[in-house]
Image (cartoon, rainbow, N blue to C red):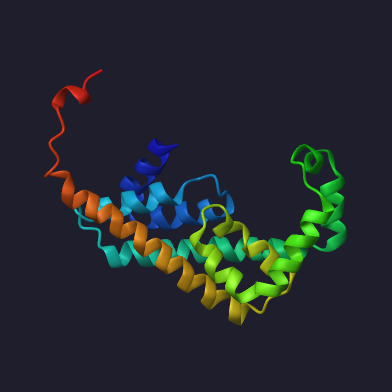
Length: 179
C-alpha cells in the first residue's frame, strides 16, 4: 500500500495527493497519515510547497466528503434497516439500536460532530454519511468539512516537513539499510 502511495505522489505530485486523499475519504482504511506526512516530507526535498500540498489535500478531502455525503442523502431508514438485517450487516455485528443511538447522537451534535470528527481517523470520513442522511445543509457542511480537513491536513503535513528537516541530522547506522 505504501509503495502505491509513494509512487503516486512521486509521479503526479499535487494531483496525486488530491486523488489519494479523495480515495482515502471514500475508503477510510487507506491512511491519510502516510499520504500527508510523506507530502510534508517531500517539501524538504523537492519543489513542492507546504501551502500547495495543504490546498490539494484539502480539496481531495472535501471531494471525498461530498461523495459520502451524497451517499447519505440517498440512504433512508428503511435502507439502513435492510442493510443491518442483511448477511453483511449481521457479520459486521450491526444492530438497529446502535444505529438509532448514533443517529440521535448525530442529531444532537450535528455541527460539532462534523467539525470535530474530522480529527478522528476513519470517523473523519464516515461522518459525512450521517450528515447526508440528516439532510444537513450543504452551506453548513462544506465550511465545517473544509476547515476541519484543512487543520488535520496541515498538522500532518507539517509533521512530515519536520521529519524531513530532521532526516539529515539522524545518525542511522548504514547496516540497517541492508538485508
